Image (cartoon, rainbow, N blue to C red; front, side):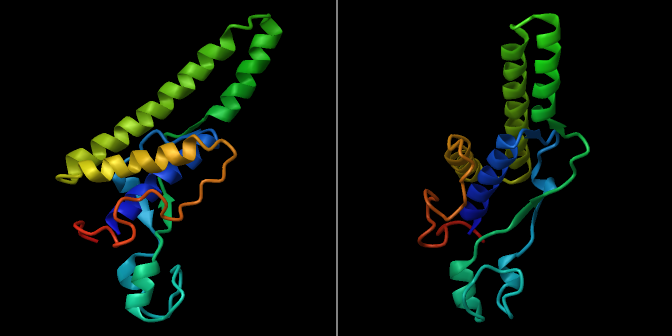
Length: 166
């Protein structure tokens, strides 16, 4: 389950970046699980399971994550618009690639801060960071925006992430 959460984090961050949003403070403290698996054994409220018993629900559990604290967030979509308007009025067509590079750097900083948060607060979390990258790459490279997390590509998904504490 832990690897599935990490993969879902990567997917969620890629969806946010694909939408043109830079978080600005992307740490594990700013990611919440709406449906923790230990609460999904009852009537299934807010859980993605087909049954009401804990075994069936935990084996089909899919994390519902929420990013919080967007106080430092920026929108690359609005900067692209304002930058395009500025370059068309000034006649300078070289401003757009510079801004695209700036946006890529902001996304990279988001990812770097997230990696540092994992490695500094969660001991031996290298496999989790790798799973975040897999989720991110799988979604970010899929530019049509269809990057639902169905568990594909998650190491250990079939066995619930064996070897990881859930």
